Length: 111
Length: 113
Image 1: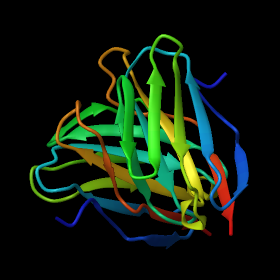
Image 2 (image 1 turned 180 degrees about the vertical axis):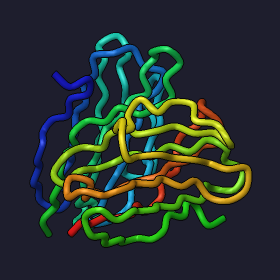
Image 3 (image 1 turned 180 degrees about the horizontal axis):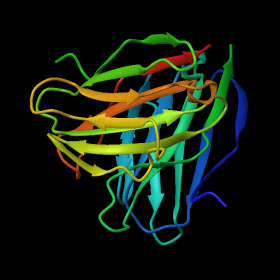
């Protein structure tokens, strides 16, 4: 079992819909990250969370440390939001600084 | 501030050749991380370096792979005697220290033919 699990793996929606992507993890963490990757492109860091909720434009990220769960929400989705969204954690293991990644959620927003 | 610069963007090597991937971190960032994304797979940690030191190389294959981050110049990921299974996207990320978020480069797509 992966230490970081995302759902769904694939998500197709219509422009304007509210989008939720979920991430569950099984290890103690110092931080959780949400990343965005466009096809053939680089990786953009969207959020780094250790508690609570963060908002940036139409993107909202929440984390529940007790339940080891995070969600990424996109309001008023747009075709340009189509990308792979990746959840990653920094485990609290032996001072580890590396990221452990989920498999990603491929989001397609149709006009 | 040019961000994290990786070059080349695309690299084609024949089996048995050497591949050198370069990563220049953001200005002021002394922590560098290399990650590999195999086709249709998720990202995997390879190595974490600070200037002139390898801090964690637990994700590096035991043979043919090496990394360095010299006092001057970019971090280098070196793959000797490449094989088809090394074909992947290699991403570099940097941070000012371990408590900050990461900035990723655009990656190097390595194709071994």
